[in-house]
Length: 310
Image 1 (tube, rainbow, N blue to C red):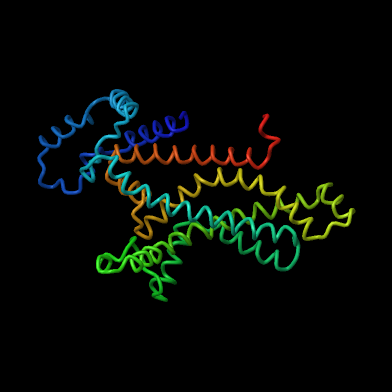
Image 2: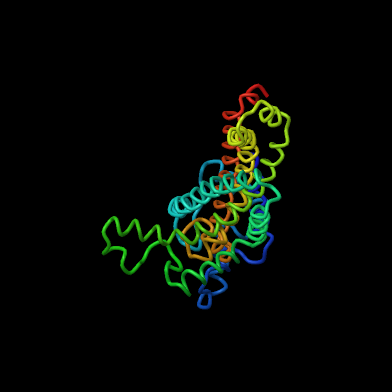
């Protein structure tokens, strides 16, 4: 809860320190008189001192009132309700694929550390790890959508044909629109988990219990299986720490592909000086980050009984 309050308060302060306000963020202001703008600012309370606005905002949030979006002219809770499921779908699929692929690849590399194939994969993962999400998203967009024409470029559905499709065709259409945003997040996530798991697996294979197992004549496949179990706990911790990075990456990826999630809504709200929507997105994002870290701790305790007494 403290993390959520601090993050939301910091976002509130930064928004109010920036030039402009929600009234100036309205797109068409050319025909609006100065008197009417002043009236709108008074109605929204934007002419009050920041401390007064902050106290009023915190009181509303404490009562579960997130306010009304000035850019979309509807309650913020409705905007979040429309966008959050799309972001959760994208992030959950990317996280699951990153963990599965990254740990499998990293464990394979760690067991063969120093080999030619390990060095090649290490270089590839370092390259992916170094690429910003938006740059990778643009590159995939160019290759698969604009050059190969095998996947749609933007959006979540084919707006022109979606209503005339069968339920199966609609599901396939949504899946095709999901591939590129999912792939952008998954490639980088896989590289992160693979590099971490490789290092952990290599260290575990040098520990004394592995040497003892080999000295007792245990097969190499059985030794590696035990090593993988020992090396999986740090990966669980990493998955909790990876969640904020995944959320940040989703913000830019959603913007590139026009994916209707919270990330694209947040960036647009920042440009429109939509205080209520930006603050609500930060609150939800902070809560998701804290929940992800808590879930990682719970899974670690389940996997390692030694942690239950600590």
